[in-house]
Structure formats: C-alpha cells, structure tokens
Length: 480
Image (cartoon, rainbow, N blue to C red; front, side, top):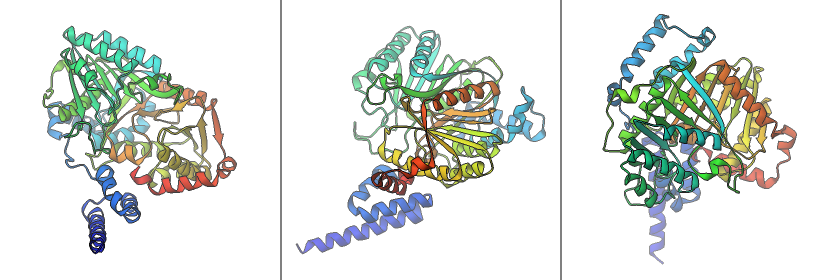
C-alpha cells in the first residue's frame, strides 16, 4: 500500500507534463487545448490514452510536397492564373461571376486551386442513381480508373464495384484504389486480395504498423474521388456501401449530394488523387498526358479545393466563410454535423443579423451521438440570431452543401465541424454557375418540404437530459 502514493504522484506529474506540452509545444487551437486539459483533469489516466489516440498531432506535416505539384504542372498554371487576375486580363465566360473573383483568388493563393470554366456538371442526390452512373462510366473505361473512398464495405454494392474493377483490370485497364484504413476498418483482406489478384493496385491511407490495430483515429482521408480515363470525375458525400443506397434499416433513405464532372476541373481532381496515391504507395505516379486529357464540355466554373492537417490553412473553411460574407440574399446549408468554430459562427450570425436569409438543415437522427448533441447545442445560437433551422425527416441527411444567392455553391466531403476543417483530409468542388446552383436550391426546397422547422419555442422545450448531453458534447466539441 505504501507504493500507492508514489504512483499517484507519478500520474499527477505525468499529467502536468503532458498538459504543458499541449499548451507550449504543440500550439493547438485554444479551444482544443482547453478541451484536452479538461479531459486530462477529470480522467487523468484514461485521458492520456485518449490523447494518444485522438489528440496526438500528425508527425509529418509535409505529406504532399510542392515539388510534386510542380512536376504535375500545377505551379506554372497557378502562377499564370494569379498573374492574369492581378493584371485584370482574366476573361470570364459569364461576366456575372466576376463579382466572386476574390473567392477563387483566395483558393488559388491558399490551395493552388486552379479555376476552370469549361465544365459540365451533373448533380446526384440519390445513391442508386449515383452508383448506376459511376458503374456505367467504370465499365466504359479504356485507359485508367482512379478511386479514393473513405469507406468501402464488403457488401452488395462493394462487391459490384469490386467486380467491375476486377473485370477492367483483367482487360488491361490501369486500376488504382485507395481506401482509408480507419474508415474501411471492417474491410476484409479477402476483398482487397481479390482486386489485387486481377492486376489492380490497392493501397490503404495511413495503415497501422500492426494489422487491425490503428490508433490514428484522427488525420483520416475523408475524400471521395473517382477519375475515369482522365476525362470524367466524381466528387461528393457518398461512400461505397449498401447504406448509401438507402436500403439499411438503421438509417433508411440516405440523402446525400454528389457531382459528376466533365471538363478541365477533372485535371485538378486527378492531381488531388495522384498526390494522395503517391503518399499512400511506393509505386508513384508521374506526369503523363493520358492522365490529363480532359476536354472542355460546358461552361460551368469549378474549383477543386482540398484541405487537411498537412496545411496551416483551413482552406475549405475559409472558402465557406468567404461565401457567407459575400451573401446579399440567402445562404442555404445542408450538413450532417454542425459544430462551427467561432469564426464560422460569427460569419453566420453577422449574415443573419444583416438581413441575409440563412437556412440550415440537419438530420433528424444521429450516426455519432456526441456529434449530434453538439450540433443541437450550436443550432440554438443561430436560432437566437434569427436563422431558420430545418430537421430533415425523409431519412438520413449526409449532404455537405452550401449555396449562396443562387450564384455560387460548394459540394464535397467537408462537414461543418473541427474534424473536417482541421483533422481530416477533405476535398470540395466550389461551383460558379447560376443554373447549377439553382438545381441545388431546388433540392434544398424539396428537402425542406420533408423537414420539420425547428423554432425557438420548440428548441426551448428540450428535456433536461438532452440539455445535459448537449452541454457535455459542446464542451468537448473541439476534439470530437
């Protein structure tokens, strides 16, 4: 029993040392720092292990190097476009989009996101339609297939995708597949082996050193990309699994948003995939014209914007804020998780108080309880400012979309939370086109007709139990 006080002193000193390292060495965001200090204070022993799993910073921030981007031709194209914008010589296909020049200038400078304006864009809000289209395009591939998904299931849809990849690889088509090791943790080795045996290349993003024991719960690749023959690209919220077809009992109908893009923006999607592939695989891809042979197909303006813990900039979040602050008429947001940091919260409150019609739609059921309760907590702030909040009743809402004034929009993989803005690797398409954004507005209005509006009166009737869960979840929301 005499040794017990010494053990207690050891853990106290250890906790203090860890707390000092969080504050002075890692230079985390202040809210995240306080959240971790609270965890260490209230659960001193378990808190240390939680920190190792959730809080330890990424070890190598220079994952995707500028040299790689230079070899892919990005550096030269970005500098050329920046020069044209600064000199006032850039030509817009649609002059009304020129008012958002500062938005795509922001993305050019912070993320090397080249602005393209010769794209054709198709919107999918239904999983069956999205995957039927994707599988058709995969079956028609003649040169290469590049797929990156956060979640891949070994279920009926997963097997359909695998069978197509196996068939195309056996025909001589170059097939590469990246899956996130944590997001796809249930994926069987037999599934992966069957695809590899056909000649396709398969890689896991941030796999563990010991199989099946992955402590890197943060810093996951949450992106969803598909590039076929360098000409067609898919980007959005759907992962590969039966639940995304809306056929599982747990979630019911799955409401998401995904894009099929034809045009020059596919080149930028290809670059994103190659950067991710070269990080995950020793078999690096080098520049070849066949990867960048997308042809002009329309007149929709698109920027492909990435963000992640490898960068000091929160590029997608900055894009969201810039969009919101540019709004004159309305801002429509759909997100499964709404945990905005102070900067985004202020932007939405300022827009609302300035007379902008701010509408936010969230799901009616949680897939992650703590995140959902934190979402309910932050919704109250916007209701107080005068925003309209809708709770979608038609199934599970997983779409990540923002539409501003019916002129610009963003669709992609980034949720409105700290995890998407700082901890995960994400990718969004920023769209500059009246017709496309109007389709997203129409989709929002249709979803609103299947939603319950959350009024201040209803919000204030929440039970004491719910309020307690919200308070706890909000306290730890910077590390969720």
